[in-house]
Length: 91
Image (cartoon, rainbow, N blue to C red; front, side, top):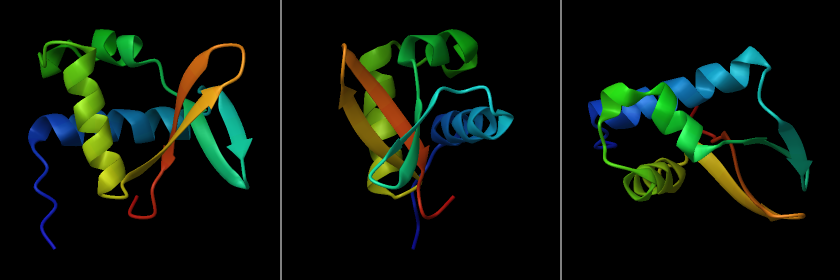
């Protein structure tokens, strides 16, 4: 099965997985699954090489990675709204 990922998708995925593995991300366990808080604005700041134009485009790319089961997603609404991501079953 071809995943149809481009270089930017791979850079985003690699950065997130490396950051998860660093142990420096805020971690939450939800329904027995581990998720990590991802600040999308910070991701864009850390990866200017992407030059993707903003958070809307980033969200589309993250949604694509979730759909392909490379990442999993949870929106936590507790004292605000937080986007949490974890490793999908393909990573």
